[in-house]
Image 1 (cartoon, rainbow, N blue to C red):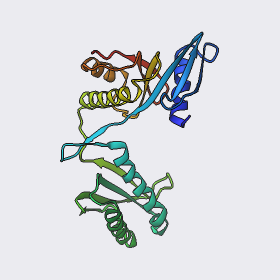
Image 2 (spheres, rainbow, N blue to C red):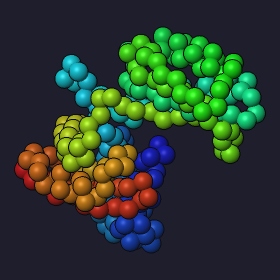
Image 3 (cartoon, one colour):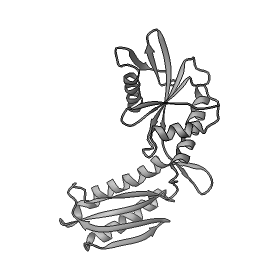
Image 4 (cartoon, rainbow, N blue to C red):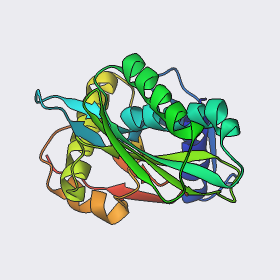
Length: 236
């Protein structure tokens, strides 16, 4: 199993009574795993719930993927340019994603950070549009964490409507996985590992009751990043 599948398997085992009552084994992908409960074997398909972004052309993007690019850029800048900073200052960057051209953005940002890092003035803040992305650099006192260059990522295509995001994520994952798993042997469950931390089990419960769609799953379960499991009711 992949690490996320193994985490879901452990969470479901605990939810259903622990190792003395339930065991988990690899599946054929699909399903991703099997649970053995008494004399029954249940197939479980696993998928992640990640927030969508709304691209200007009307298509959905994946916020986790877009934000990860920004985080990696920050880590790379800290590794390459952080050691060149004077000992009493750090840089705090603000990066807006998604960017139009990843390679071009990375090159331009690196050149600008290198320029600021050459003679940083404590307390100053610089702003620049880099290839359509609003970007900022603040010169701050040295951070106790050890990182000399850190920052934050803002996604300009994300929505603040938590319930809308939860409903769209659920609908996409349930429909996509139901199509993939429709020919599998029953009983069949869908386990949803929540990556969208703004939405909790209650948010998804409300969102699921607003959905009217058919699917092939006998049970649909939400698994939090802490391993807490709850069940959803999706109406048809």
